[in-house]
Length: 404
Image (tube, rainbow, N blue to C red; front, side):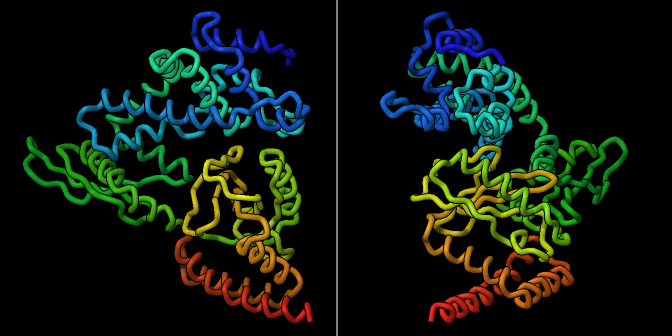
């Protein structure tokens, strides 16, 4: 890759955004392209600022511009439908596509470690950079010019979202496929004379009913069923938690993969300590093919983002920020305060299972017992939590005895 100087970076960015030459402030453009890893490696006397503050502002500017576009474009859409359309545009994968089309990756200012970790191709890094660039345009040129730039660079995604606004079946399909699932449709009834047929169809997920709808044709009824499913996001999310669970025999590669992923997370969050936890961290223990990483930080930052991870908030555990990275082998990152209760408990349980093989076997038997009863993810997690509480209590007793 050709090394660019600052002036060339700003000129290329301005041109690719379709802005007049000189309209984008150079200091803001460079700040938008400057990752924290780059700042960390530079001398303190340079007093450089990373893109994080601009990312925060750009997220708001982008959200407002997209919300207004959706509001004007779909006057009959409900609040829930508008929210889903906006979410389809501002999700990490969508923004990364636009960033790649703009060639932002080659313009980024990254630290050496982040470059080696593939930061220029990272969906999370590119999405963050695009938000920061949008903020730079807003501060340099005002809201109207920022809105024009957003509409210009996001036009293909706007067109896709607008198509989804008329096709709830496609929207539901894409939503479920992003979670590696697929809907099924089944005709319940067909009534009426040939010239005035009425169809009732239900949409299913893994055999469980999500919603139903009716129409004058099978296609129309399927669209109505999909629309009804999308109109109940809480029920849909609950159904997604009912996915089947399976365990895999322990794979020694899990430890190596955890080390590699931990290095990437440390590069993204320099102040963090990262530990491999969960069943995949216990040699010999069968587990779901998901590697859990405990990320310890000095203080929780709700605006934190991790490269290529989906942010899921606390996800039912106060004091934790939960992130997930989906793929053939998935990763969960649990961000907690280092040295706090959640940090201590996770490491205590892991070390207890590692040093007490008989307890690890008991834990495995409990997990297999839940699976034998046909547990889905939701029920499996509930059954497992009781066993974890018992093991954690034993681990505390064991640790107290060791200190005497």
